[in-house]
Length: 43
Image 1 (tube, one colour):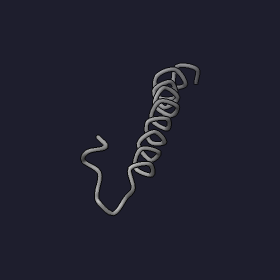
Image 2 (spheres, helix red, strand yellow; image 1 turned 30 degrees about the vertical axis):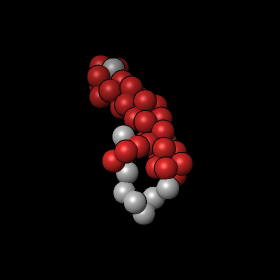
Image 3 (cartoon, helix red, strand yellow; image 1 turned 90 degrees about the vertical axis):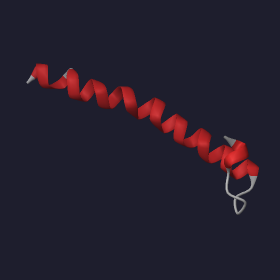
Image 4 (cartoon, one colour; image 1 turned 45 degrees about the vertical axis):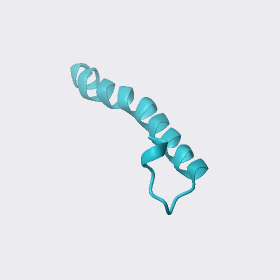
């Protein structure tokens, strides 16, 4: 992943962006699935 980064972004910045995106996906993904699957059953 880091080898494919654009030359305009430093390695550290790119790594932090990838980690941030991964954290958002891990945090929001399960909540979104829960909201789509469980919540409609309660209504």
